[in-house]
Image 1 (spheres, rainbow, N blue to C red):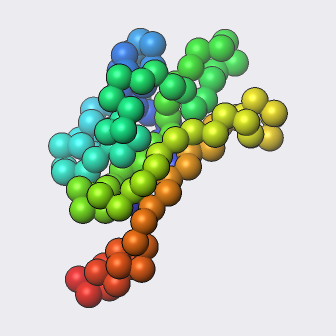
Image 2: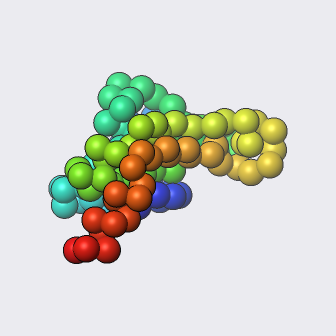
Length: 110
């Protein structure tokens, strides 16, 4: 699992236009077999995790996982309260997983 502020995303999907740098590298994550776990659960949804000073929204906080790990993710969503209350400039990205013991055990066995 890779989770955090990538500062990039997919043009016209995670941003209104084509301003992202490294969008090709970002797309290569999915090409390598990783799954955008948030997008898988929110196929057509437009939800932004960060807004520029000009008020433009972007989804730059992501969670990628392997197909096997993604099966154990029960929820992926944003909590906008910390951003709206001024505690941070990003919405919190929440990822809940089931069977973490099994996941950790299987990773150790690899």
